[in-house]
Length: 277
View (tube, one colour):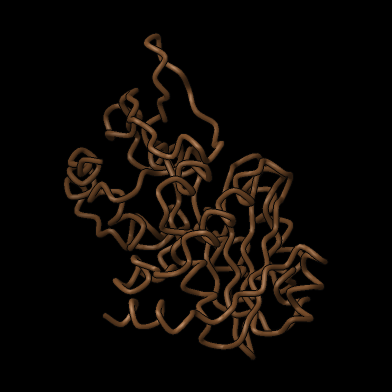
């Protein structure tokens, strides 16, 4: 994706900072920077707000994407694909998506996750199954690689194509500030404007986020859940969304998904040595 020079030009023409634009839209400066640098593309909600803010149409702000397609490499993953006139499988170019800035980057040792290929494939199949609100819980001892698996999936290009509208990420831990995290998600989705700052109820925010997501196809990652009720507080997507929950507590994994929870085992000695090599 190319840098959006038109959007940057219109902002600088008015002498506005990225932070000022972000405040007017109900998002953050990092997101505006990603749009201008071409690292992300505004979802329809933000495209409309940008047009209103700058009094320009989508073309003038560089908010129209070219129709293109790129070859899809995982033909056996059973993700939705198109077929061109020559019979070749094609995957549309990456559509507008929201990538949560709280999502950690992918470390080198995770990028080459040794010994987990079969499990990663299984998880990708499950997430892309098309089942309504599919929830995958990863349980296991601390340090066994649950978060690494979730990160690998969240950065996987096939998963990002499938969940084309974006990925939200939250790290919980033993004492999470659930309301603060929900407000942050709300801000990313453009619903945290000044009129909503008085909302102090998690259920109210959850309902607003669910409405904002609507029919979008998004992946919501809930990392390091210690209690089931806290994990489920972030089950705020629509029917087209998928979820990954990681937890060190078997009862949390089982309560979230029943018998379908996946318990991650420690790597074998050989795989562990390969990862360190």
